[in-house]
Length: 124
Image 1: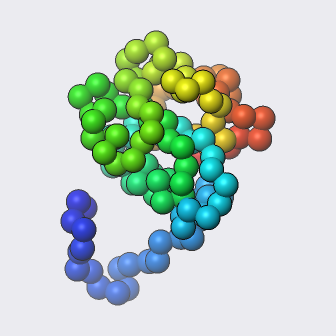
Image 2: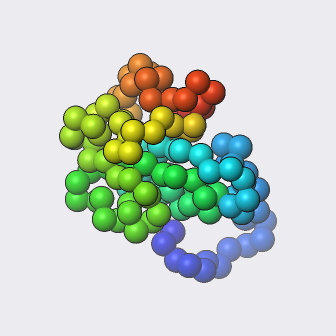
């Protein structure tokens, strides 16, 4: 899964979707603020990299030992999920999120709703 190139039968592949959560992956859309929880996990790593293609401002949560990895994938802000700001999902820059991609578990909805913009979307 970490290979830059992989060999697969054509029938086993699909094209990358042109949009993710309404974001254009070619970077031509407006910049949005996105939160990715559990960004060092399998789904979270892909989400951060795809969001970077969309020119999103990415805030990500992960454990302290994985913060450098998540930054290297393209996250602009990284929160240790065990710190008070990480538990509250608060962006260090104070921004609210247009999109939350939730890859973790055991986070109450009230934590998300408090951090979304009025038209924000959460993908659980």
